[in-house]
Length: 118
Image (cartoon, rainbow, N blue to C red; front, side, top):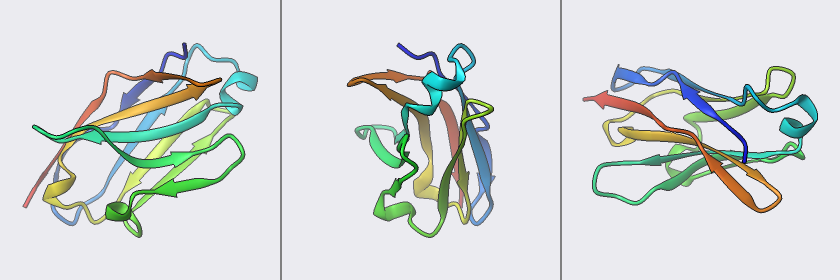
């Protein structure tokens, strides 16, 4: 499994921005580069859902509810994946999790709380 750690959550007003970071401090560069990475979120009482993903090949994918507002990026040299969240809405509130997929196995971080007040 890949150890990943999220950071950057917090409290924001609607319309503001936050940037989440996911680090894989124990992974070596070649391993991290080959990972498919994703950001998921879970709101209270709801199931965990995909927000955005970044494949090892460089493609990205977004949930419809964040298209045009959120951007996923990765820096393989720093072994990090970022989620830039702009124009936040109250419904973006939840725990955001980073996921790393390696040869069909998924590793999760502990999550970081994002709270957006309207």
